[in-house]
Length: 67
Image 1 (cartoon, rainbow, N blue to C red):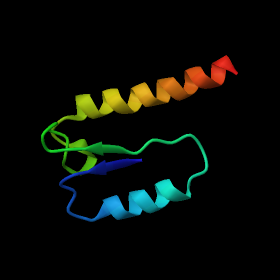
Image 2 (image 1 turned 60 degrees about the vertical axis):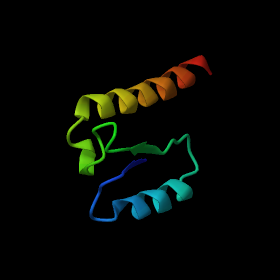
Image 3 (image 1 turned 120 degrees about the horizontal axis):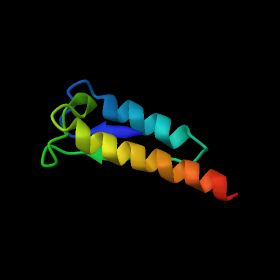
Image 4 (image 1 turned 90 degrees about the vertical axis):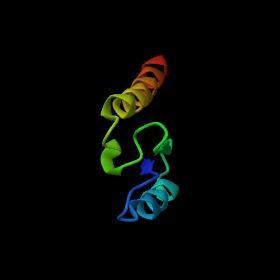
């Protein structure tokens, strides 16, 4: 799940509710204005956000291959 420091639509609360309900491998990624990714959809620093997100996906896929 992803949250943003400067998201004006209060999506963060919805993301946290969904995150808490999930019973699968999960991680809550919070993006800040200091990182340049605090806006909705990490606008301003998509490269950084995509790097974090795809690294997490890769970690999950590798974990499944090892089982």
